[in-house]
Length: 461
Ligand code: GLC
Figure 1 (tube, rainbow, N blue to C red):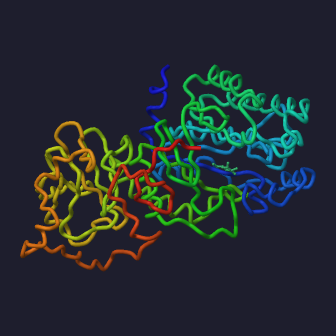
Figure 2 (figure 1 turned 60 degrees about the vertical axis):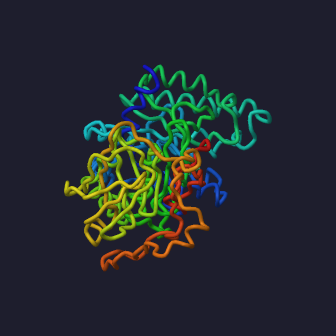
Figure 3 (figure 1 turned 30 degrees about the vertical axis):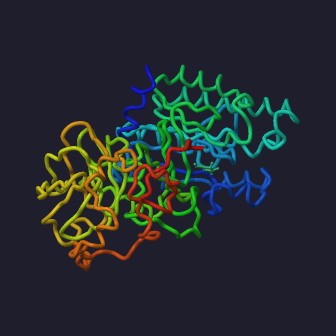
């Protein structure tokens, strides 16, 4: 099967759930607690005796992901601390062999299959319990071989024992090479066992897709940004820095607009429950997606980029304007060279009056206040292949411009009206509102702090 067929469902999906869960949820200081607090394995191991997630119900996770509008899930089957949520012949530090007494990965996979949502496995190549990981293959060839053999054996188990798996999401290859991990051999085995699987780029081989982390950064290859909902992947009781539903929507739109996916993380508590703030934000975004999903799912990279009002996504000849800053009754969007067939509000289907002046699409008679304060989507039907005006490559477009010296002589200049104040417009929820980037090709570094900048095209990772 060619690469692109395998990727099609994933590229249409646009939005998935990442889940970081393991014994580290007990100390509740994130999944790096073992490393950050330099806890020796013998002191860390007893956590497994307490890890008994009585309230874990995989069907509830699946229900949450689906109601959030997410189309796939990726669970940490084993993170850097070495604790496997699944049954393994090559490790005793696993959920089934300790207090939980359950194969949590099996429950998760079965729930996903039942719920009809795509299943992904996160798997960390590194395991901090192995001194060879720190010593490296050169200094400790035997220890290294034991580590790599164990990793290959676990990946084989994951690929053989749980039916169809859609995504293998490696992590933790650093600072070693694909040769060190024998990644080519490993991934050949994976593809033999799971022919349709998608593999990320973290086994130190590019494979199917790039994985920019905590930033939206487009690459030419298929890509997926992974993000936390607060500032932590694993459950962190002290981290209260939650993103708002509007921030999540903006990030999702930025990913879709750059042709990428968003993998948004939750960090369940030791008992398997997902923090309330995460649940309510996910459900709120899900309600927005119920009504506006057409402007996200199945969209591709939009060459129209963003403008003062927000961002765009594109599907065929249909351009979606995501109006994140509602300007009032009138709205102008630039750089459209196509004839516009029609404009309507996505949610209500109501047609919108418009005119085209050169490349500028001018809308009139809009509601004074944003119909959806999170993101109101306007649907613009274009005639023919989307064509974007590139200011720098189209000198003819400026033929009728009045040069500065003559402008001074013009008596009456049109004034630009400020928008009507809107009472229910929320206070700015994130970052500065001044960072809007009107040029899709500006190549601005697309981190999460400048939400409307077009994602740049530097390679991820
Ligand atoms: C990093 C971290 C990790 C997290 C992951 C998610 O590589 O080591 O804890 O799982 O990124 O992308």
